[in-house]
Image (tube, rainbow, N blue to C red; front, side, top):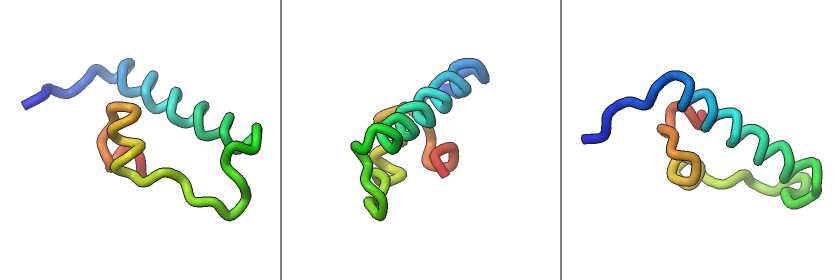
Length: 54
């Protein structure tokens, strides 16, 4: 089983996800009304848990 990551690692991954999603919205890559990627997809992409994604 994989151990928990440190708080700073978690914070970095979370901030990276938020920045990426924000960038995609601002630049128009994600259009109004378009769904965000699934929790599972985001969790895998950013190495976060589904609870963190929520």
